[in-house]
Amino acid sequence: MPILLASDETHLTNFSGNKKLWPVYMSIGNIRSSIRNMHTMHAWIPIALLPVGPKRVNKITGYSVEMQKQQALQTVHEVFTHLLKPLSDARCQTGYEMICTDRNVRLYFPKLFCWLTDHMENATIHAITSNPCPVCIVPVEKLGKYSETGYPRCSHADYITAHRESDALSLNEQGVKNINNALWSLPKLNLPDLVRADILHNILLGVWKHMIDWIQDFLEHYERINAFDYVWCRLPPYPGFSIPTKLYRVVSQWSGKEIRNFAKVILGTFAAALRQTTNQPRLTGGQVQEFNEAILCVSSLTDFHLMTQYPSHTDQTISYLKRYLREFHETKNVFLHFRAGKKVKKAAAEAHKNL
Image (cartoon, rainbow, N blue to C red; front, side, top):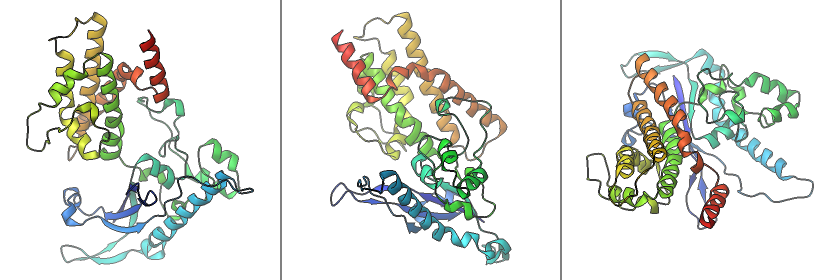
């Protein structure tokens, strides 16, 4: 019986001390996803509220900031240990007799199967720093780049040995925190297997959220933002699509639902804004090439996003996913200038203004 966990630290309010909530939910894999995803079925149940550490820690003589952070993380993992203790007892190894939906009694073996969350919480769960990947040993400079072969998976057996031998230097070199990870106590659990593909965190709040900023900067650079807003505000209603109520450029925060709505129409809207010729200067050959490459980049990401939502996959659809992902990485350099940090972009804008 696969045990599914999900958590998401939620910001409640800026008032009354900047309150946050960090709930953990549980479901089981013996439920169809179409049923589990309906909130009215209550297939996800809350089982814990995790402690949220202070945003800033005080500087205390003899009690360094790094030590405080490490002890706060250890406290969270002690809560994990208490929470996951039933999965490591003897009954889970011998099995539980339970009545199934067909009224037959079967022997069930509960096992932690996955933990759905975003990258920063994965870093907390796996006790790693924010840069490393929780699944594989990929060099930091290779993050965000497409690879056909992949990289070796993380070896938590080596991390356990280093922790027991108090080899903090070796753990630090691999980006692992020197704490007793609660998940190491669960039998027959491979930690990298807990990280599963998640459309919400990986695609919507991940790549698409970055693409929103890239597209806006791209349109502003080529003075096409007005043309884009003209099309954006005149999108007709359609079942399952909520028409925008604000200009694209004035939306300050994008939620998962809004980004999902955005992904349905961005390709057509973006292409229409770039193809518009009325009251627009004549394009050079290089600009035409950049426009076509930008449209292809957005198109490949759109196709990848839509195909990931298939209820099942074959070898052919997986080959399509790989092709779309490869095309996205091959064409994303058209947005390279707009993917720089805020300080770099601000300096570039000032230099452009002075010119």
